[in-house]
Length: 344
Image (cartoon, rainbow, N blue to C red; front, side):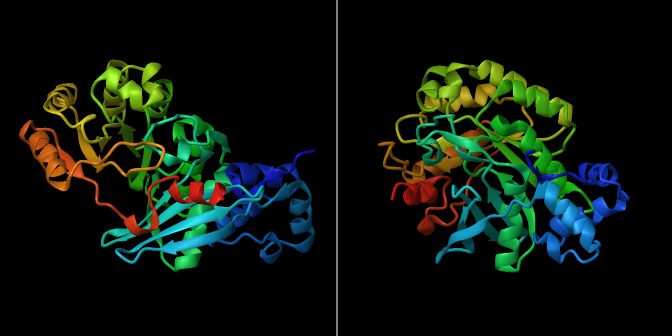
């Protein structure tokens, strides 16, 4: 019999588990709070539970832990990059960012990725496996324990495609939001996707006021397909239709990620078409100057060109910002550090 991942269970699941083994349901809440509010992992130290109950729980479940493999601290801003080692010795990465408005965790949802975006380091070795809810939760809890800081914002924008690990990601969101645990506001959670359209429709029906961030990167199907294989399956018209459905269903503003690549998607024609497809949309464009990797031989535009691209979008009444680059001296973009370690 396979053991249950105890610290990846929801509050209701833990209550049901306790009833199933002949205990009172409130014991489940004690366990849930121990993991998700107190950031503890050693079930033997949960002395509120009788010793025989702790033994009973340990016999049918396991606590999924991860270890800090390495931490890198930026010298240019208040960013730390973590490499975490999992139970099966796989390595994942997360980023801890400190802002005036609060601390943000950027976490991974998969080991690797199968989406194949040309400029992304995390996809170069393909998908190894999905992360479990506990493995996602523990990235946040471990960074809080290590830094002594409270994390109030979560971004699912590290390695992996969150909507390709839909059930585990949804469970993670519900657990991290639970008021009996970490109680992070759903409005402080951002999910980034390259555009798996059926899952966007499915997510829109969950009635979760999270922020959806969609990787667009080109307003033209032919060019987008060259850098994002997902575009060969779902065209931009279908994607925008799904995004408008999400906007109407959730009444939430969407973000469109746009990695600016010199001489690829930074022309006047790109500006005009991008403005056309986003006209009347409750959204904003997050312009990201390309972070070059060895496997993709394109260049980022010069800073003045990036600024001009933003200004031209604003002139066309398309809200646009330029992403502030965090942790540039510690390879804080997704996949870079993990790949440098796994290739050694």
